[in-house]
Length: 109
Length: 116
Figure 1 (cartoon, chains in turn yellow, blue):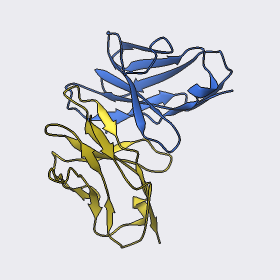
Figure 2 (tube, one colour; figure 1 turned 30 degrees about the vertical axis):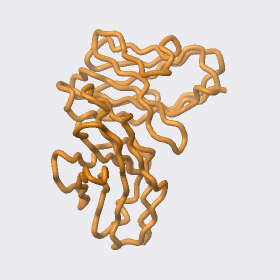
Figure 3 (spheres, chains in turn brown, cyan; figure 1 turned 45 degrees about the vertical axis):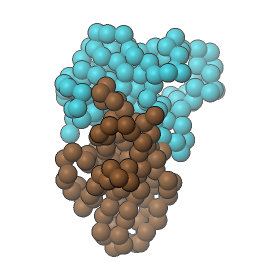
C-alpha cells in the first residue's frame, strides 16, 4: 500500500545549521512526491514537488528511488523556516494526496 | 497563489446537532475539492473528494451519511457533519484545484470543530 513516513516529529537546529527532514515512501511504480509547509497560524502550502526539480526558499529535495526517500534539505537554516513540514505523494492516477505525519522544524537563534 | 477560504474558522456545537462548513475558491474555479480531517499531532486524512455537480467519493471508513458533502458550484463545497458527537471533534481542512488532476491543490485555513 502507498505510504509516506516521516520518522521525526520534531527537529530542532540552530540558525545557520544544515537541515534535513526525512521522508520515506512506499509506492509501486513511479511516485510523484511533494513537500508542503505550514507556518504558524497559516494554511498548508506547497513548498516543492520533485518533478519541478527546483529550489524554493533554499530548500531542495531529491528523489532517491533506491532508498525510497525524498528528504528535504537546506544548507543553512533560518529562524523563519520554523514550521510544520509534510511530505506527500499522489496515491494513484486519481491525484489524491497521501500525507506523512509531519515534522516540526524549530530553528533556534 | 490561488485562495481557498473556509468558514467558519472554528465552531462549537452541541452533541446531536448538525454543523456546516463551507469551502470557497475565491479566484479560480474549483473543478475538484477535497476534504481532510486532522487529529491533534497527526497527519491529514483524506475523507472525500467532490467534483462539481457530481456526488462525492468517500474514502474507505468514512460514513457518507455522517459527513454530507455538496459541491453545487465551481466555487463552493460544503461539508455537513450530521448529528455530531464529541468524537467528531477535529480539524477539518479543504483543498481545491482547477483543471487537470496534476494541477496544484490549494488549501483552506481549516475549521476547528468542537462538539460538546
